[in-house]
Image (cartoon, rainbow, N blue to C red):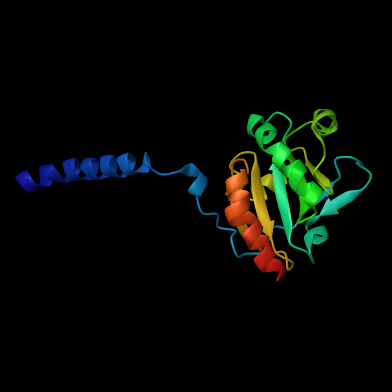
Length: 175
């Protein structure tokens, strides 16, 4: 009888240990279940011209960065100068996915800070972001020529992760 009363205590101790270990995990290292799988298909209106559409098929044939951003996102503002500088180099095509934003705010933001995107898709309701498993903005996906997601950056791009991980992967996928 005494051993049976220790079972709940053992279960409680195991749960505490799991939660304690979870405190030391980096949420930016959450593996995406989409890595090495086809990018979710989408067709959305373009941010700059709502009469035109952009979709996942536009990303085929070239290695692409798909950057999920919003004008209300402080971390997006931090990473934006890096994206503008990268776009000027022409090293990789950058598409935007404007997430849960208003068209007016997003256009003002790009006008004020510069537009690194070949095209931005306007995901007003966030449905495409959900399909991509967006945890929060910004997030950036490296998508190969065949439309397969090869890497995901959760949070803002930095000079370091761009230099050490993203651009070497882009070069490898282009080769």
